[in-house]
Every structure is written in structure tokens, then in C-alpha cells.
Length: 171
Image 1: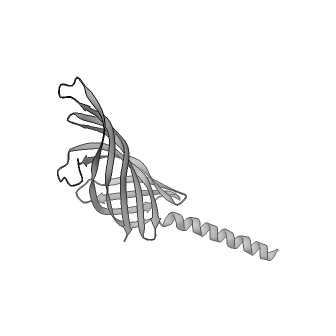
Image 2: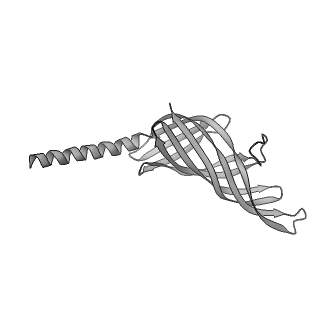
């Protein structure tokens, strides 16, 4: 009976420490790089405004680098700050579930570019940015989701998909 009790106490201690380690492994200071693109479904209006053509097109998000800080606020709750060079800082609320850091979406003004090699932005959009991250050793990799509306000159539409990522290295 004594061996069984010791066995269960050991198992409970291991299970508890693993859970705690999983949650706390996200905390820390990071450097990051973020970028990607969005797919937009919309309409291309004629100059006279009397007709339009359905279209799907891609616009590119800026590549950003900067500092990220993740602070635990409660057992499974975090604050994530991202301070990119030349951009306004972002503040996300986040939760941990099954080893995944889930970012609560926030609105952000972002420039978009017509192609990846263009240095001048096409227009600035109000987009919603969120996503989920997984940690691998000292790398935190976020798969980001982007939503919003697009309007520029004769094109207007909705973001229907995104391929955006953020890779952060723990310092």
C-alpha cells in the first residue's frame, strides 16, 4: 500500500510540473520577424461606376522586425507586446491551451503592397490580426490570421485568406 501511495504522489508531481512548465515556457523576451500576404475577393469597378467584375487578388503585408515580450498574468493568461521598428506597438491578450499560445485578435492599421518587390505601399487598411503560436526549443512560431476589408481606387473586397507568420527567437 505504501509503494502504491508513493507511486501516485510521484505521478501527480510529474503531471503538475509538466503542466506548469508548458505554461511558463512561453514567458520571456524575444526578437521577431513578421510578414506574409492576404488574399482578397472583391470587385473591380469600371471608371464610370456602372459595372464591375468579380476578382480575387493578393496583397503583401510589410516585413517587420522588432522585440516581443510575453508576460504571464494568470495561470493560463498572458500579455504579448510586439514592438516593431517603425510601427506602433501591438498588445495582445493571449491564453494557453494544449501547448498552444492563442492570440486574441486586435485591430491594426497596416500598409499593403501590390507585389513583394515594391517599396511603396499601395494603401493602408484596418485589419484584424490574431493567431496561434507553438514553441520549439527557443523558437516561437505563430501562424497568424488576418481579416478585414480592402478598398483602393476601383478595387474593393474582403480578406478571405492569409498566409502570414511571425517567427520569434527567445533571447
